[in-house]
Image 1: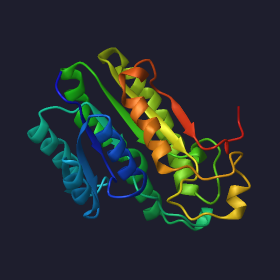
Image 2: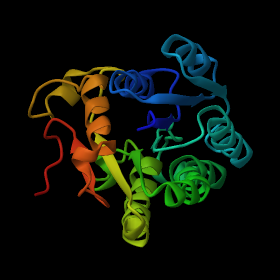
Image 3: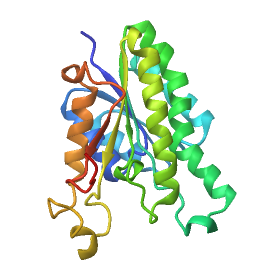
Image 4: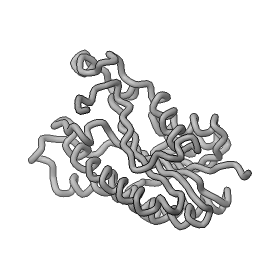
Length: 233
C-alpha cells in the first residue's frame, strides 16, 4: 500500500503545525502551505514538501495540488486550515472585509474541493477536514465574520458530503474552542466547563482520527473540540 499523502494549509504554526506533526507521526507524507516561510521550514524538518502562498489565492491552491501530485503521485487527505478573518463591531465591518472572510473561510474550501475531488474519485476515495470554530453554531459578537461564514461552511460541508459519499469521499468540520495559541483570560476560562484552553495537539489528534479509516463512516459532521463551551444539546 503506498504511503498516504496529506495537504495541510496554514501549516506554518499553531494548530496547522500541530496537525502536520500529528499526521507525520501517523505515517503520512505531507505537503504544507502557509503565507510565511513557516510551512517550508516545517516541511524540511518533517521530510515533506512546503510552499509559501495564500489559501485565498486560487493560483496558489492549484500550484499546491499540482506540486503535491508531481512530488508524491497521489493525495489522500486535505486539511483546510486558515488564519483569522477580520473582526470589528458588527455594522462597522467593511464590505471588503466581509469579502476577504468569504475567500478565507468558504471559497478556500470550495476551490480546494474542485481541485482534489477528481483525484480522490480516480483513487477510489479521500477525506477532507476543515478547521472551523465553535462559534459557527453559537455565534459570538467577538467573531462576527467567522461566526457568520463558518455556519455557511457547515452547509457546504453537508452538501459536499452527500454529493460525493458514493465515491468514497468524506468531508467533516472540526470546531475548536479556545486553544493554547490564543491569549488566555480569566473571563474566557470561566465560560469553559473543563476550565482550560485546548492544547493544539488535542485538536490535531481529532483531525488525524477523522482522516483515518477508523472514521470511515463519519461524513458531513461538525465535531466540537471545545471543552464544553457550546451550550446547545
